[in-house]
Image (cartoon, rainbow, N blue to C red; front, side, top):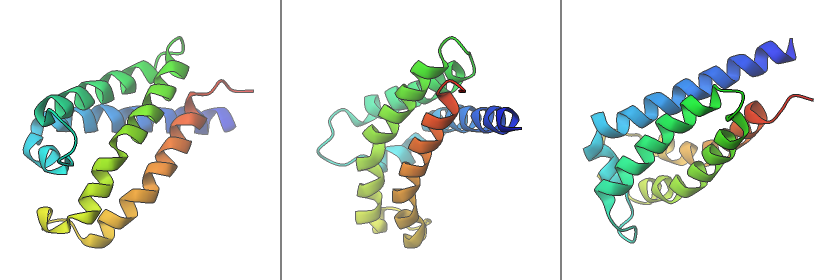
Length: 124
């Protein structure tokens, strides 16, 4: 049963990453607003993070690359945390997002990190 749950959660996380990555290109202006001013090359960073999310989501589905993808997901989630913090600190840039949602996104990053770690680590 644990294996079924873990596999199901892996597929859901992979799907989430792929869809989020594609969304970087479909909704680029939104992602550009998320970028803190101190981060350079905003369009390139949005594109790079979008490609990384798609690749990591797909690589997580392959047993041979799953663990590497998991650590990549964790690194990416840590790397994009400043953008989530910037969103929370600048809610007027995101009038269609409730401030409480911007706040809740912050600890969700930690949950996503734990999720990525658990589903991509080898089953013992």
